[in-house]
Image 1 (spheres, rainbow, N blue to C red):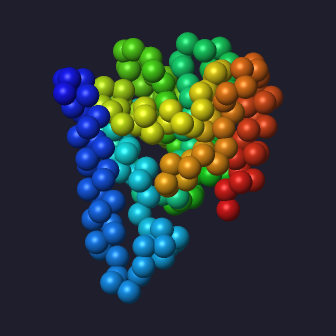
Image 2: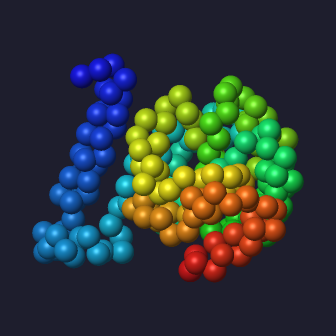
Length: 191
């Protein structure tokens, strides 16, 4: 096994072990199909993101085991993102901030990470960002979710990693009005 494959294999084994533990912790009267459809069944995304999130200061942030994750694709050097992000923060603060069932994760592949962290601090973004140095399995978890071609972009997933909404994959330009319309679509799909 190559050195680069070891972290991926370890992450996969951790995820499998977590699922086995969740199944073992279920009451003995539940059948497998009951566990799969049980509303309190633990999601996989909290495990996938655990230890891989940073706050705006670059400190490791605990993942919230929530029902929905909004993955916000971003780059501090993108002019559209610079215009839209303050609008998203204001929308989030007004409509989504009090929700216990939701976490926003900023996904930026910028190197060094300090540039996106500075942008997040300067614009008071109350979100987590992905620590690319420790991303491991997260990249593979989102590969099937489609590709965000233009930013700003969103993928909304549930706690099991199922895509509920995405702005990506079309190759069409993402404009500020389409990004703003995405916020209304996201709000409409969340209960």
